View 1: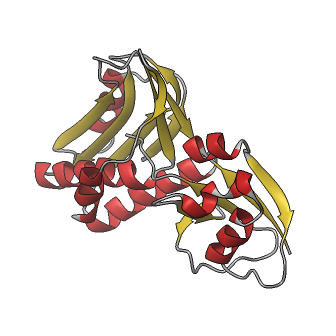
View 2: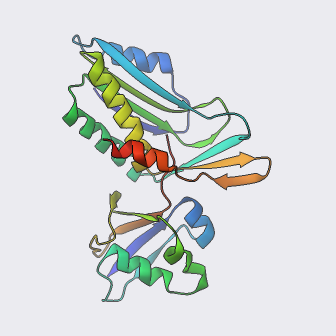
Length: 84
Length: 145
């Protein structure tokens, strides 16, 4: 399974990454498990685990951490929004 | 006819209000909200967004507003990019038969936009640039709906 991951705003700055196309191990079935997997790859990615109030979206809709992940999904991680 | 736009350029408040006013014969009132960049310590603000999701989230909010209130026309315009103090950021306008629906729907739209639409503000001040933190009060206001 391969997914497109996007990072926005302050999170992108801290990770020094706008996103990545990444193959996933078979154990990753939810957005929450994806976050844990991505954040466990070393110091650069640790902010993904530590970030308070991190938000996520699957295929451009806000979702919860138990949202399933499927092949080809676009999964975005970002801080709470501040528009308006 | 509803309008949802995400753009870097400014919008014409008069033209947008006029269009809502003329949207249908039964319009009895138009409520508009215009958000602007606050002056003071902030020298400029850069708004980032998530292209593709932003438009969808605004359209979803307009659909929800239409399910909850009887509305003649809705317009939501949000800018992105670098803006200076006093510049307009967002326009929310609602036309309806009676004022109660237009007031309620416009407040709903801006409250929920602030906690759901994927925009992020970065402020430039004398001390440097900083990402704006989400306010707990905004979450509380959005939860009322």
